[in-house]
Length: 200
Image (cartoon, rainbow, N blue to C red; front, side):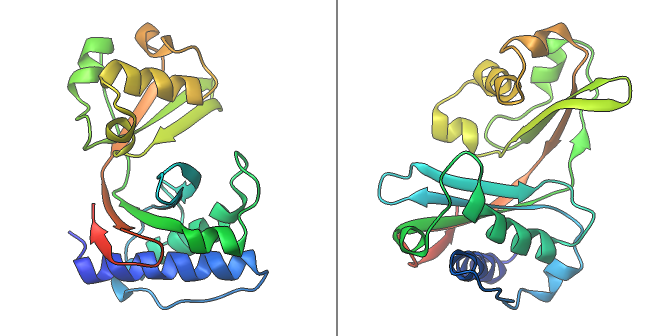
């Protein structure tokens, strides 16, 4: 488990790096030493306040580099999430920041849709879907563990919307043939813009 003080430092660093990026300058913020020793992923989420509407979310689920690098790159990248206009410093100052620190994804071995569902814990497991043609990855998408709770989804909606996000039919997962991975995340976020950070 990541100590609360390290999670708080991660959120503070993500905000500082993102705000610097909106101004076109680089900023290296010290992160806990343990982050440089962990080869696992990180996501930075920016939400409007107080509505909590998504304003950007970028991350790396299984990067070939350490968590400190993943977090820094995600904080820079969230400024230009392709789903939204580029984030400005003024907007960032009015938003709340959330950091998800991930475990290494593990492949789910399953025999049919019911078996797949039985191996995913709603609200605890994040999931990744991948579809290959031969050895070529043609579709993929990821949802963080907190997404179904935020959206009010049941398990079918969770997996179906993941397939849709990957550019596939909603029910594609019921046909087998897709590869799924799951992971967990420790999530820390601001209660108000630049305000107190807590484990979520």
